[in-house]
Image 1 (spheres, rainbow, N blue to C red):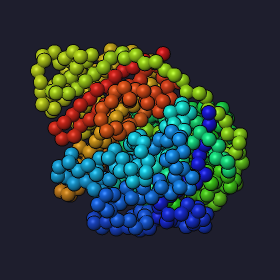
Image 2 (tube, one colour):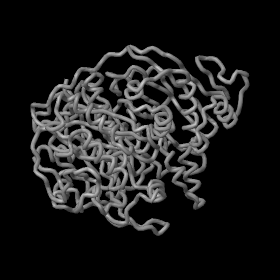
Image 3 (cartoon, rainbow, N blue to C red):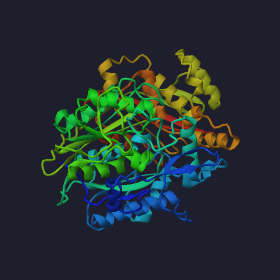
Image 4 (tube, rainbow, N blue to C red):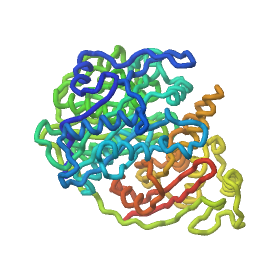
Length: 565
C-alpha cells in the first residue's frame, strides 16, 4: 500500500497564509526573518508570524493550528461524512508554553499539550482522538513517518498532520542561554555560521491511501535513530543519522546515488551542520545537491520538518531546489553540494532529515510521479514481557517485588536517592537530571539489570515512552529561573520530555528507533498496540515501552522490557 501526499497543503508563517505566495517569495530569495529585540536587550533574528490574538476558547497558537488544519481539509475536499477512517497527528515541541504560569500549573489545562491538541481537533470539526508527538525538533518528520506507517498498516485511510510552534520568551531564553542563536540570519554549512535563527509556523498536510489524481507524491520510507551520545550535542561521527537515512532509503528499494537532493535540518550551528555533513557522506549522498530552508523560515521547532517537507514536494516536482540563502563558502569537513544559487536536480526522490536534543534523528523518503513504490508491508509482531518496573507510592517494584527490599514507603527524593545507591552504578550526571529523567533512568537501570545486550541488539533496540504532562514540571521550574534572572541552559535542556529517552539511550548505548508521545492517561495496552505500528519493528528483538509521568508531587512510572517474535 502507498501513502500519498495530499495535493493541497496549508502553511501559516512569516510569509503570510498562502502557500503559493510563500513559495513565490522564497523563489525570489526573500527571507521571512526579521531582527527582534527581547526584554534582555539581546538582538537576533526571528521569524515574524501573522498577527493572531488569543480568544477565550483558543490560544494564539491553537488558532493558527485550527486555521491551518481547516484550510488543508477544505483544500483537499475532505468532509467528515465521506465514510473514511480519518486520524489526526499533532507535532509540537513546546505547544502553549507561552501561556504557562508558575502558580498552580496542574490546574491550567491550556498548557497541557494533549488538551491543546483536542481543542484544535474539535474547533476544526475532527472527532478523532489526536496522536501527539513531542520529540524535540524531529517531531514534524517523525509525525510524517508515523502517519505513513499507520496508513500502510491499515489503521487509517486518511491522516491529517499538523505541525506547530510559536516564538516565546521561554524558547528564545533557552537558546540564547546556549549561545546558539546567531545575531544575523543563519547561514547553514557556511564557514561563517555561528548559530540558528528561530521562527514560528503552523502547517498541515493530508496523508492518504488513495491516489491524489494530480502531481502525485508518495512517502516511500522513513526511519528514526538515536545518537546515544549527549542530550544537547549531536553525534561526532554522524553514523546514527546516516543509519536512519540508509534504513529509509532501503525501505523504498532505492539506491543512495539516485537521490535527487537532500533537504537537511541545517540549523546553522557548528556541531549540527558538521554532524549532518558526515551523515550525508556516510549515507553515500555527498554527491547530490543539499540545501537548508532555515534561512527562509527560521527554525520552527516541532513544525519545521513538516513545513519544510511541503517545500521539498514543490522542489521535487519543479526539478530545481532553492539555494541555501546566504551561503558562500563551505565550512564543514565533507564536500557537500550546497549552493547559494538554485540547483537543477535529476531523479524522482528526495530525502528529508531532522535531528534534535536528546540525540534523536529522523529521515524520510519522498518520491514524485506514478513510479512511487510500495513500501514493504508492516510486520505483525507478537510481544512478550521480559521484565517490568513500577515506581509509585514511594516504592520501586521489579516484577511486582520491592526492589529495595525493606517494604518501606519513601518520599520521592529519598526514593530516588536510595534507589540510585542501591544500584551501585555511579553516574556523575545523575543528580543533575530533572525528576522525570531520574525516574526514567532508574526504571531502565532496574529493567536492564543483568540483561545481556549485544551490539546489534543495542543498535536495533526501540524505545517508546509517553506521559500526560510532557516536561511541564521542569518547564515551571525554568520559568521561575527566568523570573529570578537565573535561567540556566542546564535546566532548559530538560524542558523536553524525550530527553528521558536520550538519558536511557546514552547510559545503555541504545541507537534504535525512539519516540515520545503525549497521551491523556496511562494506557499500557494502547501504547503497546499502536507503538508497534508507529515504530519500525522489523529488526527489533527487544524494546522498551513505558509511561513516565512527574508533575509536582504526583509521579508514576511503568516500564516494560519486551521481546518480539
